[in-house]
Image (cartoon, rainbow, N blue to C red; front, side, top):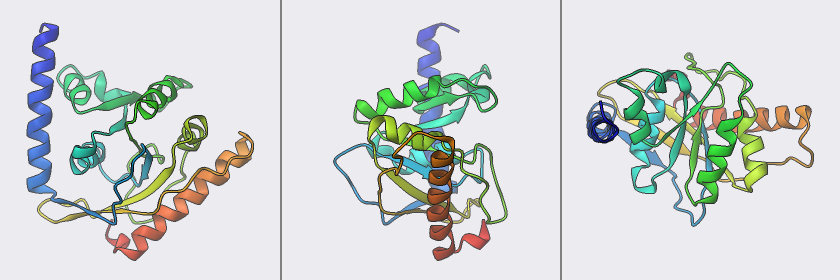
Length: 201
């Protein structure tokens, strides 16, 4: 498949996926505040569709979503994720190239969506938040917005609840400080879930 055909295929497939998500998962944004600067959205992770769900719900804002590099390696899915404004991240290696890519998007005025658990989690209680998003916030000065979404079931309205934006509290980029920031924002997302029926996740 030529590069031109790949791009056309990716755009068409991404558009169809947005329609599918709007019809089947019916995303509804709650307490979303329109800002004049890009932010880092940090959200719980309950489904492989989460990135595309958030990108669909925030489509007018044109953000980018960090997505496992595995999906980009699949022949038919790679062009779709590229067209959908996803950024690849290697979950299993020490590769930090995603930080550079996400920083470039934020500095260009585009928000970035991150799922700090790094894998899907079910049952209501969130897993540990990996602190890469806090590093990204420190590097770029972008505020962080906690987000909870659920229940993520077909033909039921999916709530996407936004908390207030806040800046990363990192006087020093130490492992302990990064871990504390991960826990702080994990607590914020959990609180949003409890307030909005998070036990159903």
